[in-house]
Amino acid sequence: MTKESKNIAKIVNTPLGSLIHVGEKKVENIKITYTKYNNLELERKEINDLSKFINDTDDKVKWLDIIGIHDTNLVNKICQSLKVHPLVIEDILNTSQNPKMEDYDDYIFLVTKLMYFNEEEELETEQISFILFKDKLISFQELETELFDGILCRLKEGTNIRKNGADDLLYGLLDAIVDNYFLIVEDIGEKIDTIEDELLLNPKKEILQKIYILKRDLIYIRNSLWPMRNVISSLSKNDYDLIDGKTIYYLRDVYDHVIQMIDIIETYRDICSGMLDTYLSSIGNKTNEVMKVLTIFSTIFIPLTFLAGVYGMNFRYLPELNWKYGYFSFWIISIIIIILMLRFFRKKDWL
Image 1 (cartoon, rainbow, N blue to C red):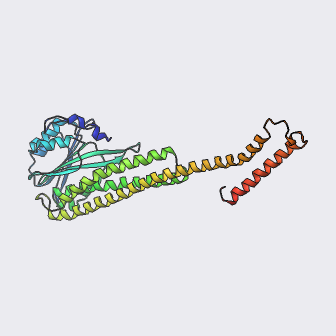
Image 2: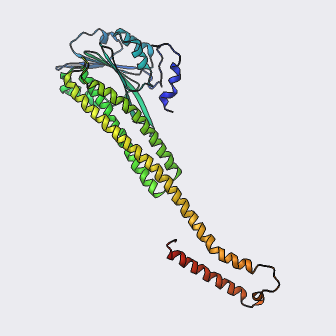
Image 3: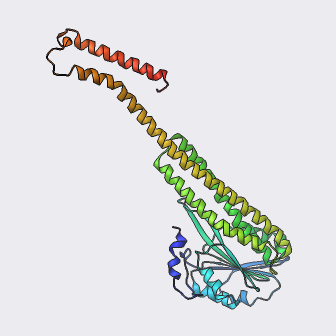
C-alpha cells in the first residue's frame, strides 16, 4: 500500500469541497515566493501579504509559488480570492490525487506527481498542483526542491521564456517534472543491472526482496505516468484559449518523453519478471546440484551397505569369517567398488 492510499480514509463520507489536508506535513513553515517578469525585467521575492499578488494589475507574467499546503486556510484564501472552484481547492489539499487536468474556462487546473528516491533509497512522491490563468500561474508544492532551479536560471538569463506568457512558464515546469522521471528510470536501470549480476553469481533471498521492491516501484511509476500522458495529451491538442499555439509544439515534445518513459518502464517490468523466473530456476538448479551430490554418495554406499549386510548376518557358518585376511579383503573390495563407480560417473559426465 502506498503512503497516499493510507490517508484516503480522512475524506471518506465528507461533504464535497471540504477543506481537509490529506497527506503528510512535509515543511514546518509555508514559503510563498512571488515572481513577475516581462521581456525587460524580472522581480522575484518572498511575500507574506497575498494582496501583492491578488491585486497586482501589471502587464507582466505573475507566478506565485507556494511551498507547503498543510495550511488549509491559506490555500482557501488564495483560491477564493481568484474565484477558484471549491472542488479544485479540495484536490489541491488531497495529495492522493492521480495526475489530471480540468478546464474551468477562466483557468486550467492540473495535478502532477514528482518522484524521487530518499536517503534510504525508497521511492517518495510529491504532489505539485498548478492553476493557470491568462497572465498568472499558481503552483502548490508539498516541499521545496531544486527541480525548478533550471527554470529560474532561464528567467534570470532573459531567455525566450521571458518573452512568452504564463502558458510557456507552465510548459517549462511540466517539462522539468517529466524530465525528472528520466533520472528515476535511469536509477532503476542501474539497480536492475546490479541485481542481475548478483542473481547470476549467488541468488539469495535478499535478491528476491529487491526484485519485488523494484516491481512495486515500477508499477507505481507507471500508474503515475499513464494519467500524466493523458494530461499532456489534452494540453497539446490546441483546444484551450489559455494555451498559445507556439507552446503546443513544446507540449507535444513533453508528450513524446512521457511515451518514451512508459515504454522503458514496461521493458523494465518484463526484465524484473524474467529475473524472478531466473531466480526460481537458479534456486531449482542449486537444489538439484545438492540432490545430485547426495544421490552420488548414496549410490556409492549401496553396494558397500550390501556387503556389510551380508557379513553382518548371524549365520553360524560363513566361510570368510574365520579367514585371516577377511577384514583386509573387505576394505580392498570396497575401495575398488568406489573407484569403479566414480570412474563410471565421470564417464557419464555426472561429476
